[in-house]
Image 1 (tube, rainbow, N blue to C red):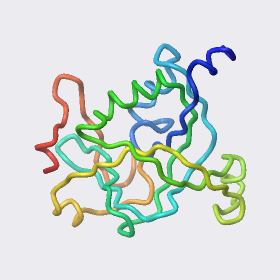
Image 2 (tube, rainbow, N blue to C red; image 1 turned 90 degrees about the vertical axis):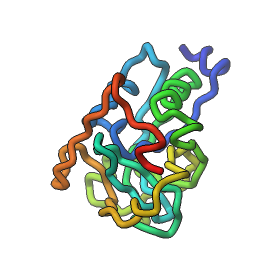
Image 3 (cartoon, one colour; image 1 turned 90 degrees about the horizontal axis):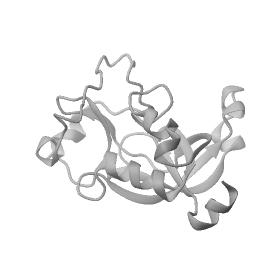
Length: 172
């Protein structure tokens, strides 16, 4: 395993929606057949972005519009190139979502749970984030969240499946 990391460098990824632990698509990250992934801790963007839930599938989207919305909470993983390719496929990068590198604050989960703030215990790290770069401006009128959970009190259950998935026409 160790020698494979030299052939396939690790990529740091920030996930904020259905890929987080306990969410509908987390199985993709957990499945070793898709590649290597290691949970590093809780992350928070250093810039506010609109995190909205939209389309008939109730998909969480992080809109590529800085200084609008909230500082967004998520999880940070180190993944190998094989896993990154799987994530790119799920997110339809670069035709639907666009993966861009941003600075995010990372805090170990134990410190986060003990009540430490990102300002106290967080460290800056560069991560890949999947953004929706092109969207209808009316999405900016949607409720904006700081954190996503499929079981959140918004009542909007994620329901996308492979046979009937969203496309650009749903958001443009």
